[in-house]
Amino acid sequence: MIRDYWFFFLPICQKLENNKDGYRFNCLKEVLLQENMTVQINILKQPILNMPSDILNKSEISITETIESSEQLQKLLFSINDLSICPGVNNITNKINELGYNEAFKDVCDIWRHRKCLLLVPFMSQKCKFCSSIRNSLNQKHRRTKVIKSVKKIKLTLSNETKQKKLMLLRKKYYKTEKAKKRAEKCVN
Image 1 (cartoon, rainbow, N blue to C red):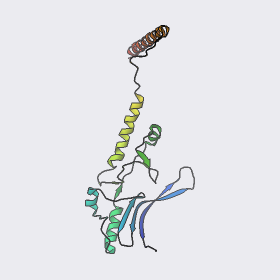
Image 2: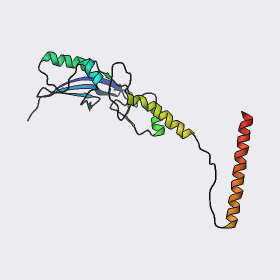
Image 3: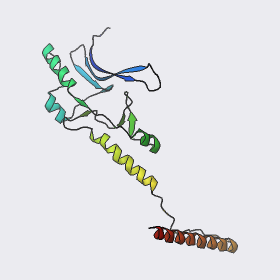
Image 4: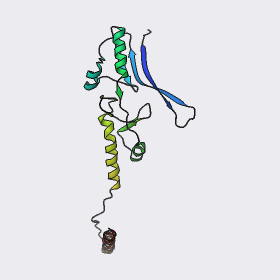
């Protein structure tokens, strides 16, 4: 059984980083008109099942209805062409790799995105709310790794008396060095 499909797509061409003459083509937006005249919309190879309400109201797109005329199809294609795609997250790829952020992934165009990225953004917004939160999350994670908590007390219990005396000497030595360090910091300030 052969089915008829019509594909409409907006391609993007990207130069490969490691190859001088290598290029890769991907589809940013795809519209698939099926045999029963229903429409399937894909953004970056991911199907859009329901659009955000603010985008839906402005663009007059209806995914669920069937196409009845060529004018309706043309109107749909132009309105999909006008949709804004979330640009994802840029300039923090080193931080994502360094800190091992699990909520981000690379899409088909090698752009870092949040796992819950909406792909489509409202007309006034620049990024979806999830992708814009990645930078704050990474900065917070980076700050947490920088803060080194000092050990306040050394607690060890030993049964042998000689080991306990050695432990007490180590504790005294540790506390003296901590005090000397704090005094030196105060002098420097």
